[in-house]
Length: 158
Image 1 (cartoon, rainbow, N blue to C red):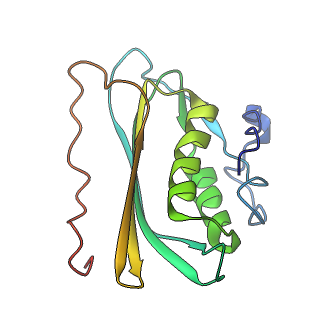
Image 2: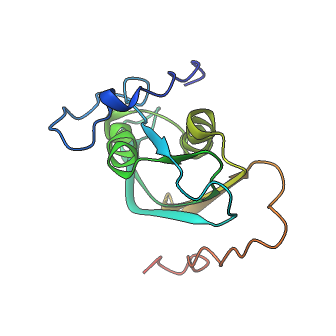
């Protein structure tokens, strides 16, 4: 998944407000952005995807994760319907936990160029070993409150 991300669409091309097909792969997914009406204010946006799924690239078996994406927006926000479609596009994608988690973070950064972004991928165990993957960009803006991601260390993830 090292292909360069597509450029964000023009507002007329947004998926919001219209029926769209589910993307067949992460590369085919359109990740829309919208202008940030509070661009002069530092604040945090959190998306939580507790039912993220992908496929093991070796066995083809399903893998499940709880993703938490925190970002401090700049001029742009990620449009949530487009994000939902993008994340769902991983359901038939073969990728290791680390690649999926970091790829999601990098794709969002490429689309909106936030002031800061952090993603936590809390993967449910297969073979008895849970894998947690964390990635962030740069430094947190001074004074910005970032709550704990709220996912307990592995004890059944429930």
